[in-house]
Length: 150
Image 1 (cartoon, rainbow, N blue to C red):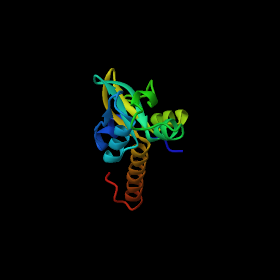
Image 2: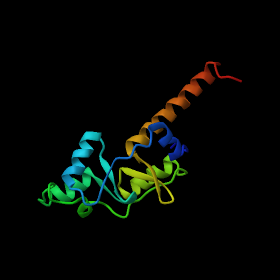
Image 3: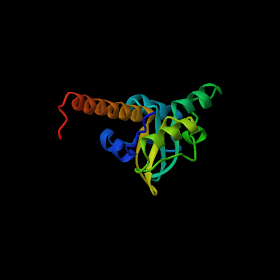
């Protein structure tokens, strides 16, 4: 298997570092509404600009819908995942995929100390991997057809 050595810093630079978040005391309904509006599967939960949790569609399905709770009265802090597994800019794409697989998660916040820099999803990492493979194939085709610069 090919190792993907690109860093999460490179992935964030390409995808952007937009962060969508909710507060712990907002309702789950507000969180789901924002997820739908922003077309994302998870939101970071921030309290006074500090990362305190993450809420995903999976949390909603398992902790609200299946338990018969109301999304209009349940608060984010009642169902969010905390503490949050995160990575740094220096983690490689491979390392992040391993963390996601091992922990069965689809989103990883990117931190530098206490500072939140962004979030990457499994989709972001797969897109990175595909673009890296396309680039490698192009280099090999150029080499084979003698178009490779010497």
